[in-house]
Length: 464
Ligand SMILES: Cc1cc2nc3c(=O)[nH]c(=O)nc-3n(C[C@H](O)[C@H](O)[C@H](O)COP(=O)(O)OP(=O)(O)OC[C@H]3O[C@@H](n4cnc5c(N)ncnc54)[C@H](O)[C@@H]3O)c2cc1C
Image 1 (tube, rainbow, N blue to C red):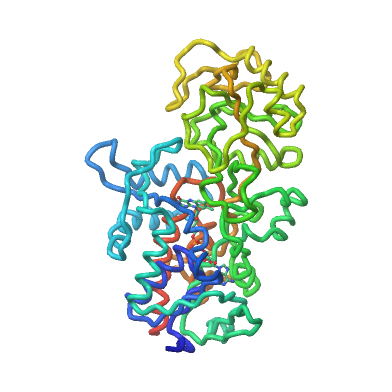
Image 2 (image 1 turned 45 degrees about the vertical axis):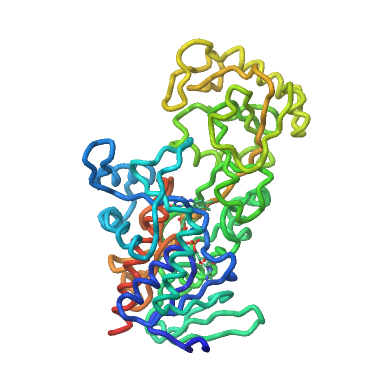
């Protein structure tokens, strides 16, 4: 059967937000075409790498409850007060409900993973992770009659005044396809895979960054919207970045390249110097600062060093750590200047507390003494071979620049009006709510809640 030439609703993108929008528009009675830029085998954008979604919930006790006010407080504490409060409250209120809808699509849950990031009260984990989640949604899309087209790079929109009348996509053979429609949902992610766009702010340092997700999120649709007069929201220069193993692939390394050993030892730069307090805070509150810290080091390179006492205390990354019987040998294996690394470890060991209870579950106060740059907690000496090290690079997760939306998901125009049949969901509009910082799991909450909203409203706009 040949694909339909047009549809009531065209959805741009093939990750979580796009799929939630497409399924909801279809539920609302619209005919839907979803245009995914990737091929079928690597469909699902960054959403395929995820594991969990943050949801408010009523619990029977403080140990199980995650109330709306607490969720909002957590959000404000990371992103500040410039967020759109109404959209944030809508997001949080809806986050209570989305689990039921997800289950109705076929999504199943698994217990929270144990490990360094403890999220079982605030987050729900997808059985099989994000790949299983998007596969479930694609299966549901096929069953409900959503037309999915792969390898369609959406390039522009055709407008009649302020209304979109068709979407133009380029195909792998170099031809173009124009798809007439009555409404559009843009869910094409951020621009974190666009190296040249990042270079504008970060210069040649970007050549050493790793992009944790899909190479397809280059922001070309975001750029098109901005050129068409969409309002900007979020932070242009900002990105969320963590420490990943320097051996990770340039793109799409996913969750398994994350390095969680940092609070268990020390981190040195390519000159063998420590540059930040590795024990400043519990890991869930600090892991997302390390990408930016490493990005500011010479050659954007650093190295997490720990000894055998720490091994087994964290979920290891997919790359095997370097291992040696002495710190000197370890430094040489990593092509670091051995003498400064050895001197740094000796200074650290001399200053590390050797009393008090060591407890990784909380800030244990085992701090170094008289080091100009302290390690404030978990300061165990590095003295028990074998010694281990992970080489580190900044791993970019997503960018914070997006388009403004109103309470119905319409893309806002710079002149205070909206595009009446153009909607946005997911990372491409997350700057309305998340301008900096991060709360684990909120990316999927934003995509699910605003994907559902945009799908429903796009179907309504298509009927108008
Ligand atoms: C390794 C990793 C782990 C993460 N873990 C979590 C987690 O556990 N929980 C959480 O909440 N968040 C997590 N995140 C963040 C999360 O992935 C995003 O917030 C979320 O996936 C955004 O969903 P989205 O649908 O907006 O974008 P995406 O899922 O990235 O989808 C964007 C889609 O747009 C398509 N596209 C791009 N350009 C075009 C174009 N021109 N034409 C057509 N299609 C186009 C892409 O191919 C892709 O399918 C993680 C991110 C990474 C990288």
